[in-house]
Image: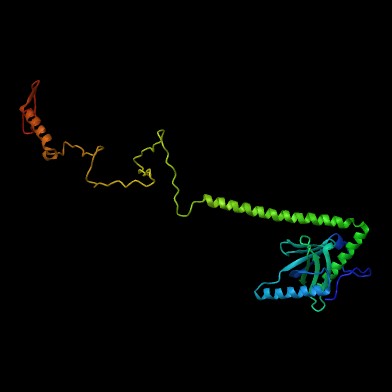
Length: 302
């Protein structure tokens, strides 16, 4: 590399002053990366940086990674490095922080510039790959420097302070946007956690509490089956013992009395003897107003 930008008054630039002062000049290139350098300028400094980044890129390429494409926006305020599709600003290199710019005469695709980082105050060398526009991009950055320097002389140095304030505000805006994105992500995570907490696990059955009457008792319905409740120790009560369907009992556990089906052997001996005595007495006959009642079906008197 043997070209660094300079401010020659008789230099013929490629763009109109308004294009760089009021707008910007866009270029597409591949971004090899940035690396820290020891000095703010110098041909040997950028040579070492280019060699280092080329070696790192060769390793990443062997792993299947491609060189990312970027868009450069050059103006009198600096060089912005953006993602081509989303237009997200990856780096904003203010012009007054750029100290060196050069293209490689041996490899006409490579160009680079050195910029002082605003946070760490370290000098970083940015290296790019452009097949057709490497030298043109270098000259465009040089023209932006020339116009910015003239504007600085005309304003008496006030314009530089204005650019610093604008740069500080832009940096603060980027910080707020980053913080806003993080807060949105945290809010989304909390909403997802709340949704997961309210959703019952798969296969579970939600049991609704039964309605009770004024005495806090579950109303009885002969249509719906009784639901067993938990005992005081938390365990379900034992299942009720089932009786054979042919044995029927009343509410007190006794067999119901049927006078049409019961016989002599259906009662205990003491009860049976009482019934026999009562039947013999009725057979004796009771006369009431000329009518005789009898329990003997063989008696034909009536």
